[in-house]
Length: 327
Image 1 (tube, rainbow, N blue to C red):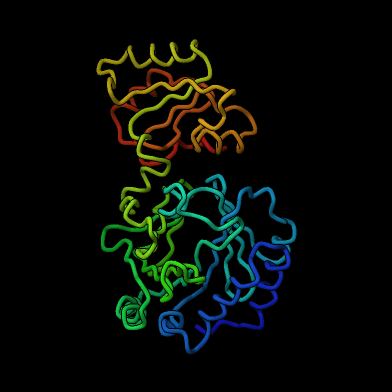
Image 2 (spheres, rainbow, N blue to C red):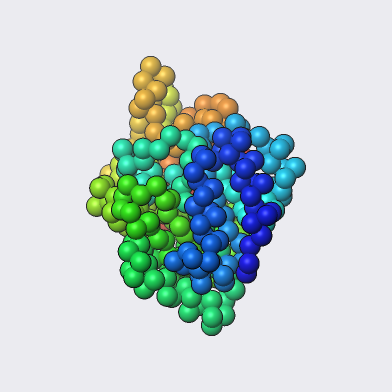
């Protein structure tokens, strides 16, 4: 579909004025809409476009101004909000890890806020759109862009509360030092779920010097903090809480043994607090400990698990945070 630059430009100017975009970042969005853009056929099949901005704290956003300019969409996942602005443009702001880059220490060097990626939303599932989507890696290779496929039949791509059938990501022809941010082409209808579905992280640019350190995107959703998050971890703030947590799991017919770790955290060493603890502390504005995390997903907060919860934790697969844990 044709996009109305006259409607988009005032919104981009506003975002720059409020220092939510750099002065250069809107240029890339306008390049996407130019007829000379390498992927112009794919863009012409888009229903909407989006900008995903990373920042430190959503409370710093001028929410009243943004709400006055467009429609607010807020989900249960902490650190995520989306505004639908004029010109068929969505602007997403997030503060949690959304890219493989975010999971590698030292891989992200841009100061926040910054654009993580631009997105082209190819929602119509017809023959022409499908062909244009399938042509993306060929067009990329011809024009010296790098491309990565994500998803496919039976493997939808999740993004917090949404999923689409599959995506291609393309990275500018100038190499890892190119000022262009990654561009996402998402194919298929957007499925929305009120429950948190997890986050399949944006693939890292294959030309990034740290690209070989990235987990496969299918695995990174379950390792969104670090490799040592596998299994069951109960974070506590006292020896008494540690004993109470251990006692619960010791009561089980099949204790988790090597899968269970109990970690005592100290306010004297805040640098040792894992991101999941910090994120929940900020969200709840109170200490989330004791906190039980299974394979990177928080499941019980501000108390030790009950015995029925411990049974469920040790016998069922955990694929998402527990309902209500982010409320």
